[in-house]
Image (cartoon, rainbow over all chains, first blue to last red; front, side, top):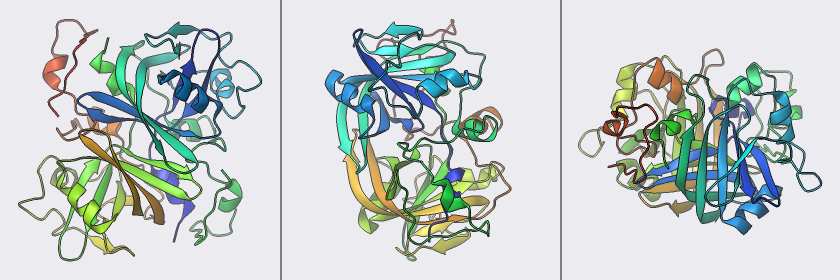
Length: 189
Length: 189
């Protein structure tokens, strides 16, 4: 039995994951960035196959991860959110640094960033898991808290976009009892 | 350049990951449990190859994930922490439910749990990433907050054990300047 509400009990941070180069870049909001190994330091990110950024990561074999301050503007989050960057440039107008691999790193209201060189791509079904070696890590602001998925949901009333691994179809939650259970839980991701 | 302090800016939840059966089980504290896909719901966990639990997961092709309340006792966390379960039974004396796959699920002060059937094992170097399909998900307590790594560190003064993907060698932080940088960052994980 799968109670969809249980999925909300898993804690995640929110990051902006970017790839590309000076000509064209793209990024998306991820809640599945995590460190995989300590020696050497490797990071992974889970990315929907339909995310435009997935193409950039595979072409450039690198990506950046920016950790926004929890009070980052909704404009920044929104611009990397549910709309695809296929038809407009999400990077345009942002404060950017280009990493050693050439990928853009978003700096707007971010407290830290990482640059990762792609080593492995794992096919997990609808999503790819990109695993790579950490080549740069920097603190931009030591006095602010990182944006978490919990804070984003509870305080800022945000929801996961359809391409997120944790996307929850709200209609599944509109059941009369709180302890809703679905044996055939299926998310139109 | 890698500033190790940046690694602290990534947010994680803490979970107890278990596997085994009624005869013998084992578990460990993980900060790298995450949902990989929504359709079907798949979860992944990153596990050090030296973790005794890794053997159980590979033998039983399943694992459970329990999300502790942030005020879970230090005894519970400690018993799944840095000591290996090779020479003592970590599960003994705990409140346990056995899942559909037969794996033990820790219930002590936990607010939700998940049961996952192993589908893929990814070799990421020192760690394995176990990816599986979610077959059970339950809320045990809807009124308490999940334990996060940030809360564990800041409020409960806990540290990541050596086998954790996010293990940080404290000696690397004892540098005169806060903006410590190491080009050859190496963690004795």
